[in-house]
Amino acid sequence: MQFVLMILLSAMVQYFLPWWSVVIIPFLISAWKGKSGSKAFFNGFLATALLWFGMAYYEHLRSGGILTDRISELFRGIGTIGLLTATTWSGALLGGMASLSGYLVRQAVFPKNPSPAEKAQAYW
Image (cartoon, rainbow, N blue to C red; front, side):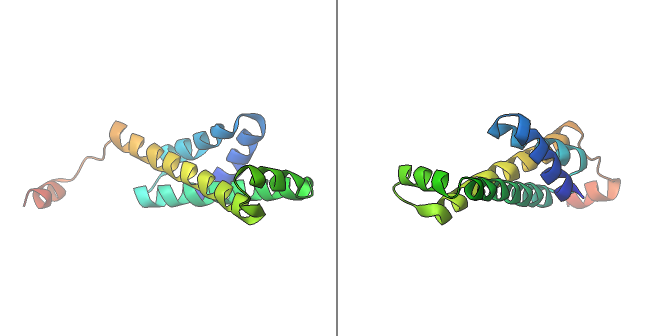
């Protein structure tokens, strides 16, 4: 549910706002519904990776490969595959870290109150 919601809302936000606005949605969704730090990170990581790969590949097909060829020349000829890979990884890391940050902010603002048994176990 969170994964699909991240993809759909991020795609809508990214269409109207700058590229960096994609991190807002994973942050907010994980702050609202994140289950654990690792799940939050991987949800944001995979959702943003799929979104950015899909959008980059769409632009590649739409331009007939001309745009990606010219951009890859700027990066010393890494090629289309390298450019799509770099785009996917950079977006994935941004989304994963934003999602983890949202979860950690929620934990800092609204900490879970441990039960007396958990307190005793942590003490010993």
